[in-house]
Amino acid sequence: MRMEIYRSNLRKLLFLTVLAALAAAMYMTVEVNFENARLLHYSLKIRAPKLTAMLIAASAIGGASIVFQSIINNTIVTPCLLGMNSLYTLTHTAVVFAAGSGSILAANANAAFATDLVLMGITATVLYSYLFRKTNHNVLYVLLVGTVLTSFFGSIQSAMIRTMDPNEYDSLLSTLVASFSNINSEIILFTVIVLAAVVFALRKELALLDVITLGREQAINLGVDYDRTIRRLLLGVTLCIAAATAMVGPISFLGLIIANLARQFLKTYRHSFLITGSSLFGMLVLVGGQLAVEHVFSYAIPVSVFITAGGGIYFLYLLLRKEK
Image 1 (cartoon, rainbow, N blue to C red):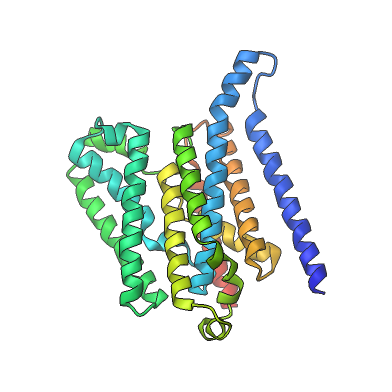
Image 2: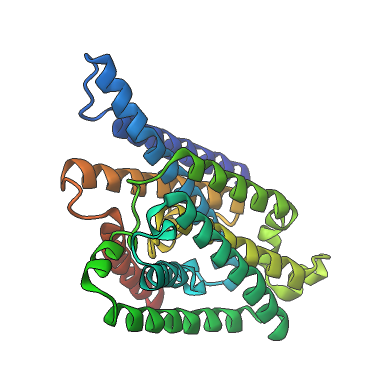
């Protein structure tokens, strides 16, 4: 019976992989002039970094969301509750408010990325590691603090926006939503290095996720250093979300959508399947959404708007389904 379920999930993952590959191929080839070599090369050169960024962001957010839900032991939470999205918007607002939209930290994509990643990385490392020890390794307290920090960061940002020059605010708006338009290869490479380092550092903890979901007492009885494992995994989740957010901007509901789609589609407890499935669903959502943005709505609506609207509806569905 277990072998049948295992093979069934392998077939499902293969099916998702084929769909993701087809979506990626469509994104690279739709409305491309194959007869003109220069136009073909230019189109592929423009689209390749966008597609790569979407695949990386989907993998980072999908994997981090599954791990975060397993840590919290709740499938209707999302890593955005840790406050990284709000810190991102606060950082960009503070830069424009203090230095102006023409400053190097606001106008230069590489400088903005480095600033976002450093600030969010330091905040995650110092704040959440400290809080986890201070609250006697209580994950729910850390989650509550993250929710409070989200409101705190949002309040500061609102105060800055109200006193900001309207022209500066207009230039700021485009940086506060997820965008795949202004991504260069240097940012992509650095994000890959950061994510690979996080995964490598947490390879032992990730292998214990199936045991962690059994509960604290059972995991300790099986020889797992539960508190240390949870602390390192929580820090890894925050760093992954920070890297993805710094690269493309905040996508609040994406993790909630793709993690629950993976759980419903695969129906397994194995995190190797769930993380892979969540990442593949993320690729489908982002690539499909970006196709609609570029070729249906002509860039009038960012992809994050569709994800937020769909995520809100899907969240209500999950609440009603769980209540029943």
